[in-house]
Image: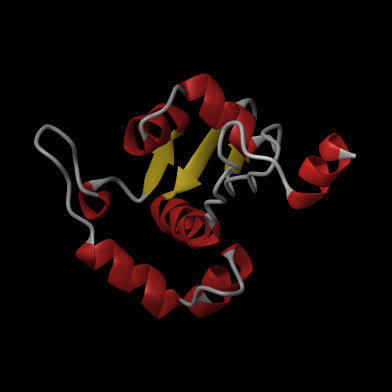
Length: 119
């Protein structure tokens, strides 16, 4: 059952990867490590963990942030809760998906732009 849950959360990450990442995570001074967090987190605790506002976490959970997959949450009426392992799987999935593209240098032109200007 638990293995199926890990596969539902993110098909690329298996239960062992999530569990290993939870064991390896450590916190800074004044912050709890992920393994010290409760099993089920409030949106405020999620915001503190990923260091952003609660409003931004609400938008991520509701799928309102472009280019960012939503965080899986449990809904109890208006209240939303996030399982610690679901948050860890979401962090790992987003961390691996990051690509940094170099922007073109300021004032540089492509060869076609230079040729058109000289003509």
